Image (cartoon, rainbow, N blue to C red; front, side, top):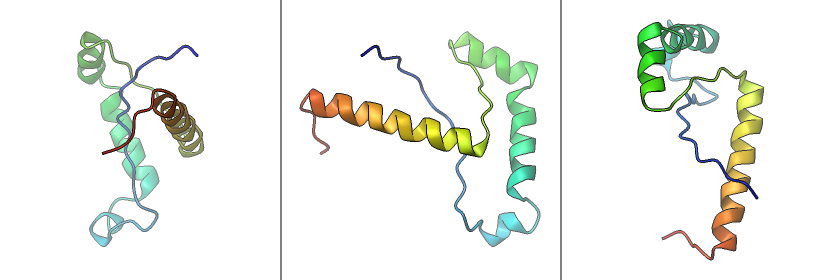
Length: 85
């Protein structure tokens, strides 16, 4: 099984957004604002300096991706006999 190690920085919000956020920040607006920053030349340049990249995924795509990553790494750890402490 070929493995690629990636660091995933993703913004996760609870289904019930805290009142302090929901008063002025809906999930679509928050996503839009963070995406603007992630697409900025400065942020992209810093990511690339560390061999990083910014991927934009819809919430449903993110859910599928994260579930697949968890399954992949859990299987690898089990195969290696590594147990959580």
